[in-house]
Image (cartoon, rainbow, N blue to C red; front, top):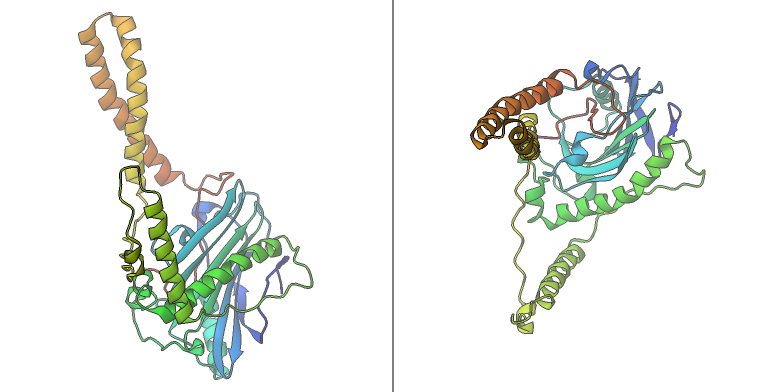
Length: 350
C-alpha cells in the first residue's frame, strides 16, 4: 500500500481503511516536522476485527532525522529490539499489549466510529507488534494490533494495562499466550526488514506477507524445556578443573522455571549527570594534582586547591548538564539519541 511516498507491506486478507487524517501530534521540542499523517486499517474476519494497523508517517521530508521509538528500548516487554542505529538511519521493533482505554486520539475516534457503524466488534485488549524505520528525511511508525479472541484466547475486561495477563512476567505461566507472543516476535523479525525497504519505496511487486501463526503450546513447552536443559549442560561442561560435573541423572529432572526478571528502568537525567560529573572529576583531579604542585611547590597548598576544585567544578559541571538537558533538548542532532514518539491508540504502559 502506498502511503505518502512510502510502501506499507500488508499481510494477506481483507483490509479496510477505518480512518485517515492529519495527526494531532505536535511536540515543538523537536522542531518542525511538517504534517504527520495518521491512519488506522482494520482486517475483518467473520464480523470481528481480527487485526488493526496503526500508521504514523511524515508527509514532508525533513533534514533533522526522526530517532527511534521509546518502546523499542523498554525492558518490561516480552520483546524489544533495536535492529540497527547508524547516524540518521535506524530500525527497531517490540512486542507489547494495548488496552483500549484513556483519551482517544482524533484518528482513533474516527476509526472507532467507522467500525461501530459497520457493526464490527472490537477487543478490549490487543497484542501489539510495533515497528519504527527511519532515515534522515522519513519515518514509518507502524503498530499491528492482534485480537486475542480470534485466536482462541479468552477476552479480558481489565481497566489498567498492568492488570492484563499479557504482562511479560505473567506470560511465563501462560503457555497459550506465551506461544502467541513468541509467534508475533518471530514474525516481527521478517516484517521489520520489509518495512525498511518500504520506507525507501523499494519493495518488489512479488512481496507476499503472511499473518503470524501462534505456536503450539505443547511444542513451545518442549522447546522451553530443551533450552533450559541445554543451558544446564553448557554450564556443567564448562566446569573448571577440580570441579565436579553435574550428574547425568539430574538432567532428567524437570528444570526450575526462571524467576521473572525485575524491570530495570533507565537512569534519569539527574542520575546520569551526577555519574558523568563523578567520572569526569576523577580524571581531571589526577591531572590537576601535578599542575597544582608544579605551580605551588607545596603539598599542603596542592591538596587545598584540589579540594576546592573538586567541590566547585563538580557542582558547575552538574548544573551545566542539567541546564543543557532541560532547556536545549530541542537542538537538532545528527543521530538517533533523541526519541520522537507520536500519539497512539489506547494505553501501552503502566
